[in-house]
Image 1: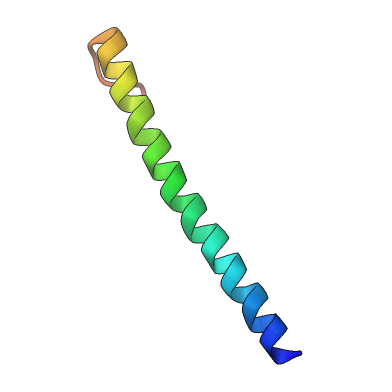
Image 2 (image 1 turned 60 degrees about the horizontal axis):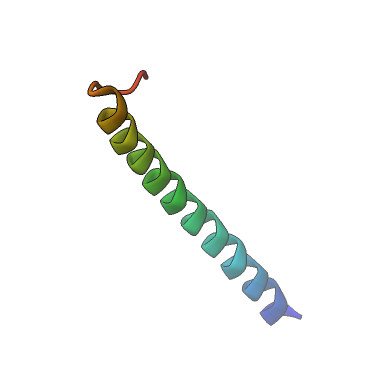
Length: 44
């Protein structure tokens, strides 16, 4: 039973970590695309 809880906690931590990384990468790619299209920094 305790091993199942640990597995769920690890799974939740992995989802949160990968979600944060994906969000950062997506923001950077979108900013790069915006700069190429409009030749200026994106709005904040």
